[in-house]
Image 1 (cartoon, rainbow, N blue to C red):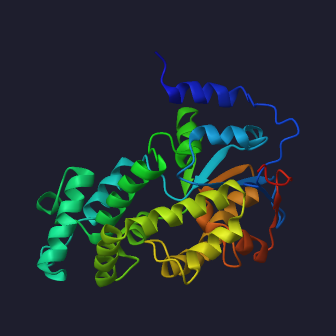
Image 2: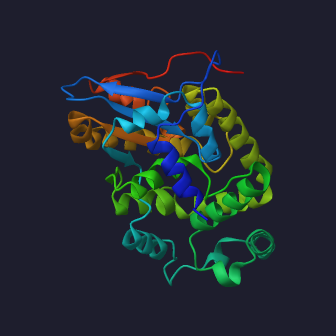
Length: 301
């Protein structure tokens, strides 16, 4: 039996698209031109909680992808040497003991929660950085409450397709920057606090992800940015993270420049990075690029 990845690739290359009729959709794909670009490029906003099948609801998405000869993403996850480096970066230095940052009751509560969610507790995972443990636990929450699937998320779909079709893939972050974003963007004591908070108040994380997912379905990228940086957000991705995203967006514009000058680049990035006055779209416009909706229309409610 052929794998689902193979079937999806065949569908993509055949440019099969379900007719939209009179339906109206959220705006999630953008056309980038100008600034001496030789050809147009396209920017797709993604959300990890959306299934691959959701791509069928974005009009002309596969046709836009077919016009491109390279894929640009945040980090190329199939670089196995880089993944090995990331795993090593998630380990605490020998001089740091996670137990020393919690009371006995807090440590026992975290241990029990990790055991229930992951089948492993701090006896197996206690050498890992708190940010890594938080992400592991967060993933399990998303799987349990919001049907998140690492195998079927749309977020990595076009990277998978590019691998299958031998299309080049380029990452915007270097390995050191990816390690920083995953494990060190927050001070260590704050990482410990976030791990404790997500264990004690998982409902805050789920509520935030539900709101962002709904905004995404409606194409409200600016509202996603405001939701993340807003004062009421007490989830693991909050104001300080958005500030890091904003600074990185300016770097990304510079790194995108050679790809955009040549054109025919298909850029696929999480929607959290794109909207708002500090989002990647605003940064691209500020740098002189023309960024406009590739599919115009209101939201299908």
